[in-house]
Length: 469
Ligand code: BYC
Image (cartoon, rainbow, N blue to C red; front, side, top):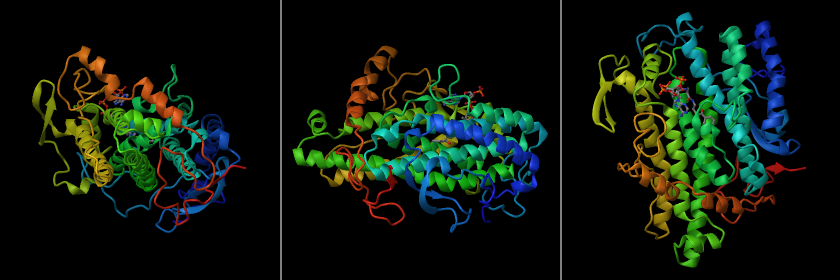
């Protein structure tokens, strides 16, 4: 299924044959570009960036590489190939043909979920708006921009659905996507994490490790949706998303590696000595992990959610890899939930957010294990870890239950007093910021991060991935 690049909006949805939709999207396109120029990585508009662009949605076509100036990147609409005779895989409509249009009675629920998903995409570009100015290498700069243009494309994916299936309401929502802004006091982004500043690269790597991974799980559950165009859009988005998490996992891994080199060289794990040597001590890395992991846990919503139950029942949002389960209806099963008041059995449908969150936590553990292997191989007796899912929660049953990072209940006063030792303090942030100096010589790395093991698309690490012009 080739993508038609001769049109103003590249697409594989036969846009040329739906003139009204095409006109509506062509009307939105210049607004998107204005937003990109204002809120995107605008200091680098004239740079040539070695980017991958999709030219097809199959294995051969979706990763074509070449030098592109970001404002000329071809944002478009790409859906994965349809599955012939696809049926709905879960909920009360199990086994019925997947929908090609939105059922009238589910319209507002679908719209709400598509808007929430869509809102995160431009939010992340806004959060990362200034990061390029302090890149640790051209390799990293290119990865940042790859992530940014693809988040822009993921916004296109959701805006296409809003325009194509939700009429005037959808068009209004598409406008609002560009009117809310990350961290804006009056019109913030919808979900908490997407209003947190990302001013330094350690935060960027944590965000791409922890928060993009929430994206993976949310997209996987929407890829199961009974609404076929939504499912196909999300399936294609997931191919792009994998690179974002790679950037996070290898990014944190390279920071850890450099720290271990400094620890070996100095023969100490003293944080101040390591900092004086220009690397990030492991306890600081742990605090950054605590911050972004706990914030991302909130993105799954409340443990008990009637919204989640009705999304599942109605065939709107399934579980990641729904085929792995025996029971796709879940109207009788229950789920044992831990709450501050003790164990509580709730209906499985009501606990769907928690099912997703637990799958996410397991996935987060994989990278942490890899980082810890590096520490162990270096001969140090320190381990990084994920905090408890009860810690520092703002959404759900644990929201007003102060605990330490291990999940042990503590008093509010102790919780507040200890917080600067559990998540980055102002001093930690100032120190990490002080390391953020731009390195722009091909192949050179900032002193706080190790080089990557290999370059992009079989090119050497010292390739000039961004020509700054
Ligand atoms: N912050 O019934 P509940 C990604 C709201 S990341 C603020 O528990 P529900 C990406 C909730 O909206 C993936 N508010 O919620 C990553 C609701 O408000 P309303 C993003 C929150 O509906 C990196 C109220 O609390 N995709 O793609 O069961 C870079 C009651 O909550 C938060 C999606 O999220 C929060 N953290 O589930 C770029 C998928 N959490 O409506 C991109 C679409 C909850 O009552 N969204 N609230 O005013 C959903 O599936 C669901 O909306 C949620 C929440 C999972 C978010």
